[in-house]
Image (cartoon, rainbow, N blue to C red; front, side, top):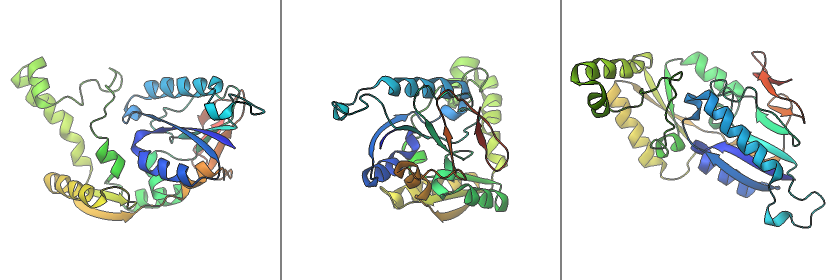
Length: 253
């Protein structure tokens, strides 16, 4: 099979590793980290990439029986703040893991995701990609909390010192909702140095630190074409992604 993968850049190392090991021919496109904070922008950019893949003509496809066409377009996204709802399969099937967000990818399954979130609901999750790509922000829209990513200095410049102090306090208030930092270690890249960064952040914010082993099985299955219905949604030609039930997460209409 020829598979086009469109994924969030936080999974760069994991996707590239599994693509290299896949028995299929894989083309990969990464979109910027942070699009889940702007669901409409995520939907727009993902659909543009899907549509572009329909007419793409990779050099290796020349002379094939189906030139310029992929057998499937695989998304390296979960529900992601409803950002994938409404995505349409034009001519090529879309394959999407049944996942709420990328943490499911790193933990290996939605069952593992549910178990961890039930046992430790106050956990803020870190992976190599989340740390390495932290500087790759997508500006928030007004509806998505414009200005919430601004630094204190930027707030002072725009709103003045008194207003900036209040806005910065509001901006940082989310920290109180968490009590633990969890580093999902897939033993890729400079993982020891990245873990030290998580330790620093946890100490600074007064959070406990947890080390959890990651699991590549879901990413591997996505790129290997092992798309069983319990873990993947295949959106056929002419269908769109819609919200599913608690277990299926996403469905096709």
